[in-house]
Length: 469
Length: 99
Image (tube, rainbow over all chains, first blue to last red; front, side):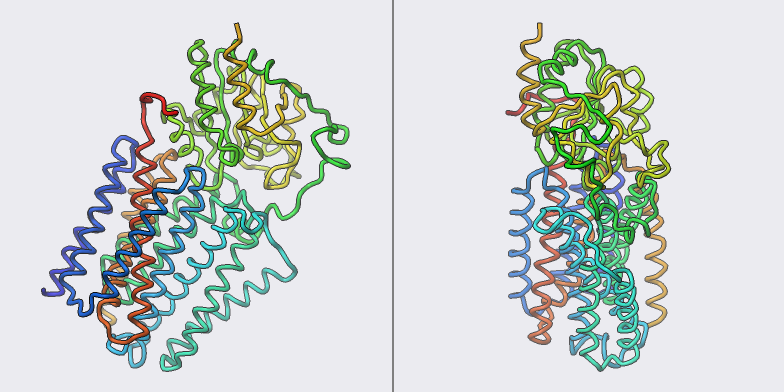
């Protein structure tokens, strides 16, 4: 088939991606939107397989089958609580694939890329390998961190920023070299290695609480990598689709940074959460933290308090995902609603480890999405809320962000849970959260602490609520 | 050649603007499915991977092509399916409670 006509299929695919993304603007249409996107992808794949003159089918078929099986297995077995890891891993595969395509194109004896090609072609190869390899290794590190196979905290060492800056400069140098001397194949390997290393070293200093920003950014990179590869193989389909994903990732990154009131530079290089602030001598659940006193509450008293409320707001955080307590939360909410108590959910944009993390968890537990309220919607409601249940959230409910200029999270928009009549904080112990900051909320007179594993506590609350008269 | 590059650049920049317009309208509650779904779209690089894997012009590039096809396919299949799994759960009125 005429190569120009194949492009019409890619155009159709790109249009379907855009329509699919557009349908994501409402939960009602989102599912069909996703299928329209998938169909667009199928059209692109079939058109490529049939009409681009494929000569050897072994690798093509083997790759399609192996990749599909692994993808299927991952998608069907992953737990909803493990979704941040899954997204990080998928980002990595996308970036890796783009880098490999660019590399193969450069090494191929029959392509128009590599030795003898005009400088701007080899420039796109260099950029494509750079972004792709960086996305691949960075995503793997993010994955390992989220799985906690390596420490989730920020890892720092002396001269870290200097080293990363030098690496970046060296990578840029390698790209220039590649453009000027494309016959030197070894510089290509060095470029790939440098980008890979840079991906690892630039994600390692980023702490767990900043993961939503990093995942969004890697999401954007995976799109940019695909677009760059589009430049290499001169394909509009890749360029358009890659640009869409790149734009999506950039928007999410901006939203996340804004929700933390921090600049992207600060997130990437600030090494937030590398140290844990010690709360008084020998901080632990049994001691009052320094001069500050907190008050405990029993499950029984909590259940009574909840049962006789008018409005209860649940403020979930990463701890909810760790404890996998979303089903118990829903169960408690059902019981309360039967008694005529109104239950709502307050979702902070950076609660959890990726954008929208809490929404997915609660949706899994069958919580209707119109009960999940954004920070701006719920904040005016706290004043007439009887009880706020803070489940595994910490920094996003810390009032210090509003007034304590010395606090590292000063200026970050928070859920104003402290304005409610009663606040009950479900927490394992008095240890500070991921950002390593002590939380004033715990010492407020209207706050009560309910210690223990969140899932366990929720189960007890469900049992106690059932017997409240 | 440079003309091709420039016309691709035009396409790239315009597509970015389309992306910004469309994505800004996605509500926060769907941000995770947006990420996994858009991620599956970035698996479009499968086109390049298929072309290289099927060209068979050298042993090295064939193997690179194979790995690229596998990676991209994991991205595509895993991404769209996991997004569907998530979106299936987003309901306004809850059905019968699951155990």
